[in-house]
Image 1: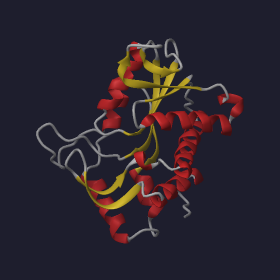
Image 2: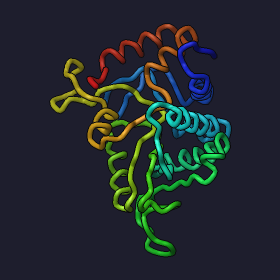
Image 3: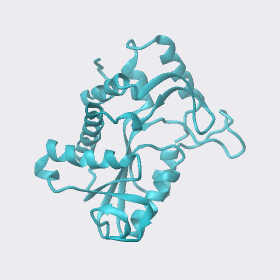
Length: 237
C-alpha cells in the first residue's frame, strides 16, 4: 500500500490495521446506535507484530508533534485501564527505541479500576503523577466520558494533563440531546474535550486519512459508504 497524502508511518499503520482485522468494513452498530460502514477495535492489536505496529505509530505521532511548531512537553505516558495499559507501556518502549536521547528515561503510569487496599495501595500503577506533565494515550474518543474520568484521576494525584493521543479520530459529531438528527449541528467528542480542558487532542489517523489512504485499494462501495457517513455525521468543530 502506498499513498501520496499520508505520512509513511500512517500508511504502514493503516495497512497493519487492515491486515490484522482491526479495521473492518461492512455494517456495524455503534454505542450511539448509528450504523457505521467501518469499525476499528484497538483491542485487537494483541499480537506481537500488531502491538509493535500501533506502538510505533503512537511514538512516531508523538515525535512528529514534538518536531512541529506546537511541541508537546510531557514526563509520563498514561494509559487508562484497561485497554490502554499495553498501549501506553509499549509506546514508552518504542519512544526509547526511536529517540533514546530524549525518551530513554520516559515513564508510564496507568490506573486501577478499584483502589488496592494492601501492599503499596493506591489507584495508580507506575510512575507517581504528582507535579508531572502527563500525556494520555488511548484508542478512540466516543463520548469522552472515559477521558474525563482519566483526567480527574490524574488531577487527583497532582498530575497535569498536557494532551491526549488516540489511535483514531472518527470526526463525527455527538448525538443531539433531542435525538440523533443528522441535520442538527453538533461538535465532536474530541472537540468538546479540547474546549473543556484547553488541551490538544491528537490522532494517528482520522476518518479522512482512512478514506484518502484507501481509495483504489478497497472496494469502491466501501469508500462511498464512508464518504456518505462522513457527510451525514460530520462534526461542527
